Image (cartoon, rainbow, N blue to C red):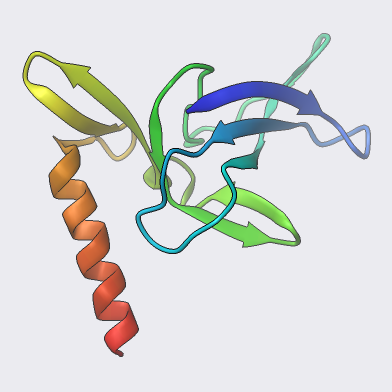
Length: 123
């Protein structure tokens, strides 16, 4: 679940948005119940930086993310390709990716992820 967000500019030039994630479960591996993910972009006062293709993360959203760690920070892998919004409606539970557009049943996506992880381990 997407929690609070903080926009920072550590060097006074680049702008980043740090987002807290409250993790319900991991499909592959294990980790903490709370993570902070950094994305390039955001707004501080009248300064803003927009990066096309960034995974949209909005407070309160339920998401499935592919994450990578780099330099002690977590990032969404592949920008928008690594982020799915979970949608619960009358048709069931689906995973919806903004770019490139993809929507499928959440159970099917989870099965794909587990199969890919298992194949990777076998190599």
